[in-house]
Length: 122
Length: 219
Image 1: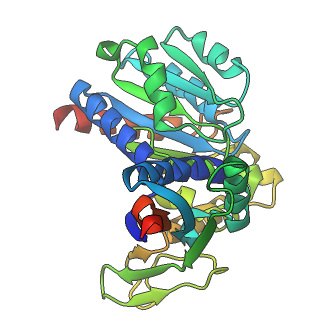
Image 2 (image 1 turned 180 degrees about the horizontal axis):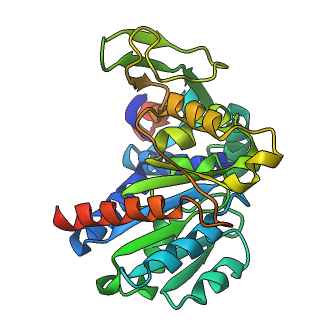
């Protein structure tokens, strides 16, 4: 249940951004969540709702893009794509080399969409 | 308006962890983040490690638990500096918790600091605490399917200790299979089968630990 801690960290970043850009409303927050982080989107959503209840972020939408795991063999360069429910094997199916993970470790905030002070005045 | 932010959600923790790491590096302290599910043998491993190394090296322990000081009391008996962190419900230790625990330790008198994380195979893998290496324990009774089910933990770790190998004959669990499965997730993982009960394999682990410390000291 690390989703609560992740939601707390997210809230901190969003609050800093609100202050910095003088936002009066936040409509949407875009996130990228890699499969390897084992974050449960529903649990993150639940934690976020609990933390933002009765605040200006109460109705903010969390857009989570789930990023599948992709890797490349350090030996032969073969790219390997993994299905979400696969048991991961980071050994190259061709040469047995070590697979470097390219995507799937993301736990990123990408974009915050909102209205600033000036937006509402013009 | 759309504001591109593009940062790791856990950036604040990454920053604190980096500060801690720099401080530990300066002091020449090797830091191990010890993780496993509850009951796999983290505290027992600490006891065995302390018994083996206490005359050779200055160890210190940070004990992380959701509740109680049971583990700190167990380790405290060995007369080495021990600090208990109670996370009060949180399923992992983070950088801030370790930072808060540091005033209770004299960093000039520590060679190796082991942070015993909260028993959990998922969450601790995501939060750095200023460590050089993550070490994961998987005990034989947990089953050989665990590396596949909890890939991040095994992917992030430098060392896997397969504990309770003395129980293997009584269980439908294959130590070699655990090793094979773990190496599929992390081909560079160092694997040591051990038994904290019989002491088997412990010396291979403590030798690795000493070597890692010597390497850090000389760098």
